[in-house]
Length: 335
Image 1 (cartoon, rainbow, N blue to C red):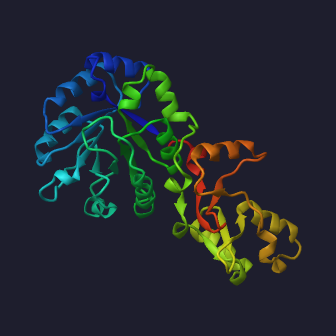
Image 2: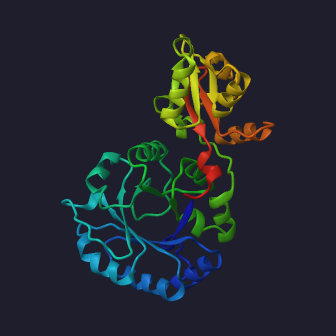
């Protein structure tokens, strides 16, 4: 996941000191908030003079059109326009190099992106007040990330607001392309250490599993008493998650079938493939975790296992499937 440093979150140093410090630590992008103030392009010029790192601009204005020519002049790498400030639908131009994004606040529905999907390369999900530093992360953003990835799988996701090392770990797991870090990064006593934690540390936190897990309605879940082998394999293929979860008539977790379980079932019956049964590919006692456990507790449990896992079923106190956590994005690394 790329880290975009919010340069105005540091009130103590000059813009030149900030740029030089971030350059030394190989920051991915410089995040510049433009709250309808054309003077920010003076800072963009300063960045351009001192660094070749990408500039990540966020424009909060009711008349964003007045910035189009200046954006093109400075060849800004990415720019997100704040939707809630528009009075009418904006027709974005085709910039020569600039990637366009639509920024929305936490209360705005993902469906607002529909009208701009053809013109935009990414969405910027704001979890705090746009243009202000120091807010806390809104956990509803986790759900919106999953929803957006499902509806717009080819578009990238940027997140801004309240991102620290604990939040960053979950955002990386959810496949976010870039996150803006303000107070946590820019006010940290050691920017290099903070950046490392944002990009690579498996940070323990008190976020509950149910805050960010994929929910049951997003998952391949079958009734074990009404499913056969062929149906299970088709379901695994349709969802393309590498596993299928099973419940019984009482809605209790009854097992799981992964790609590995399917492979073992085939090898077991390699000479008589037509005789493979559903039970041949099900692990009836899979590892799972309660939805009210914290991320910290999840990491402790995972590290204690003698084998690696790609996904983790989530259950409630009644052992009913409520979701799952997948780790594909952490394993694949940056998008």
